[in-house]
Image (cartoon, rainbow, N blue to C red; front, side, top):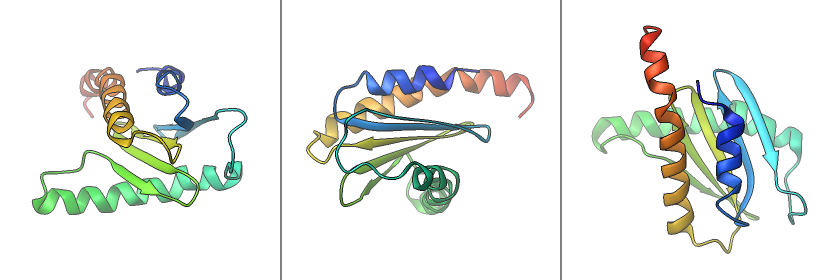
Length: 131
């Protein structure tokens, strides 16, 4: 199983536009925030977002996407102080806070590639386990 710390590090390596990274993997949550960011949300609020809100958003969007939209790739949410990119994985999801002035096309493409490459390491292991 790929290490979630690796995914977190790879996301932060994409640049200063990345404010926050969370990985929910098999019910275990890992959250990291860049130091010194403006208008940061509360840690307890972030925890509930990762455990309740983002999984629910992904479930709803995935179900809608599977009806006649060709599935779901990822979701981008625009809050007042930042964007949140939420990408489903085979074991949970990746959530990344993005600065408002970021080049969204470039950062979302890079995040989707990063999540996909990381998640590809999880899929064969889960198939071997019969899941």
